[in-house]
Amino acid sequence: FEKLVGHQSRLLSGWQLSGVTRLMSGFPITLTENDDRSLIGTFGVDRPQFNGGDLTSNNPRDTLNWIDNAKKTFSLEPLGQVGNSQRRFFHGPGINNTDLALLKNVQLTAGSSLQLRAELFNAFNHAQFLNPTGNINSSSFMVIRSTRDPRIGQLAVKFLF
Picture 1 (cartoon, rainbow, N blue to C red):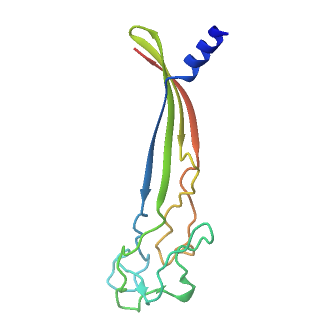
Picture 2 (cartoon, one colour; picture 1 turned 90 degrees about the vertical axis):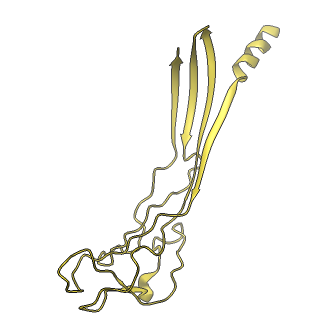
């Protein structure tokens, strides 16, 4: 019985847990137009017209519209003028991500060992939404269309010498 208990304690002891958690506000959303309504002869310089109103962002888990533009918060600028909105005055969805690693070093000889690793990226599988498009000419203006990677796990064995 003592041999069995000794092997179990050797198997269960010496594990290390490490992790990194990132909590960030979202990246800025760049407001653009791909037309030349300002009539200055360059594309990509024009900005949408900000008509005032609520810029409260929605929860992407409830609706894909990051900002509800049905109330026409943004519109094309008047012909011959540059729009009044700033290029980046609000941001997209934030990031809430935790990566974890569980590892154990097994001594083989005096100068070598094996490291057993189990790693989880986005361990709690939080949805990490990417920014919506800020191009007012797009049919998906302010609509979230994609996410970052879901939970990813990997197992590894490393020989250290």
